[in-house]
Length: 343
Image (tube, rainbow, N blue to C red; front, side):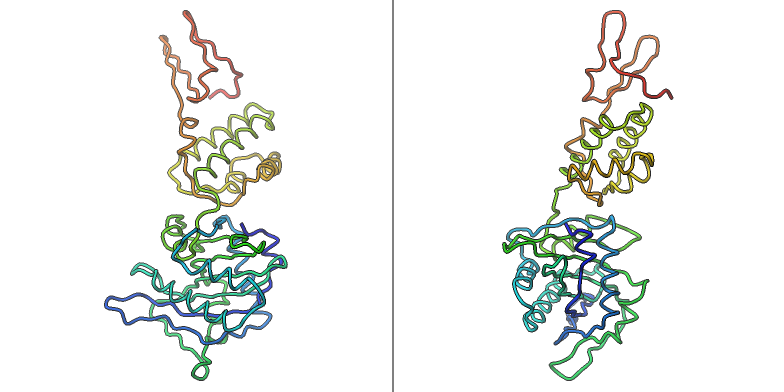
């Protein structure tokens, strides 16, 4: 997964834009492809870097890895474009292939946009960034320059790219970490702030990228859940706080939300005195704070509770995987636990 150090040290070297329009019945629409790179000055590079950092440093970013035998040309192009010194024509040709493939993946429901391909350096290593930027339906964009040397000028794209209101529909970054084909750190993000759907990434953006999630959802969910239980048991000392965090954990895991953000859970449900300890604990377990897709299939039993009803109307509720704290005897029931909270 892309790290904060990667983002803090990112230097943009080369940029190219291609316009990827709507798909229409009967064909007719085609991507509008640049012939050459777009010239960007220092302030424009800084602004693009700021946008990239804002998106990939958010809780909406997921660690990704290349999928074997994918039909997408993205993994091959990323490998090639980061394998050695920058080759201008190879970069242009590779970006054009990616734009054409992105258009192939479009459906009627897919929004038009500009594909921005960036050659960069992060943490001293070669990197490739892919951004799909918002473009209003019906907006007309034109290439400038003589035939064979046409591109989208930043003077034309300023209002589209360099405004705070511009939405990054989708973003991905890959940083080479070694010489092997899979030696990359990668993150992908759906940049729309109003509605986030991991399914949308999986069905469209992830298919385009030729990637899969770095940690499968059920594993990420189980690791976070068990690590949090360990933290509650081993670090939290006050019984009432133990009970409160446990109840919130159960509630959030049982909710219908398809995604879960540990950072948000910490901020909303963990007392301030314990927040940094909790972050340190998760970090020591190598559990990221970034949002992940939730899949509770491996912890379903831990989320279930068994209810014991007594003859006189009493009720005792315990997790189904902790039934051993209840001992049913001939004349009474023994609860082998401490009272943490009465409600």
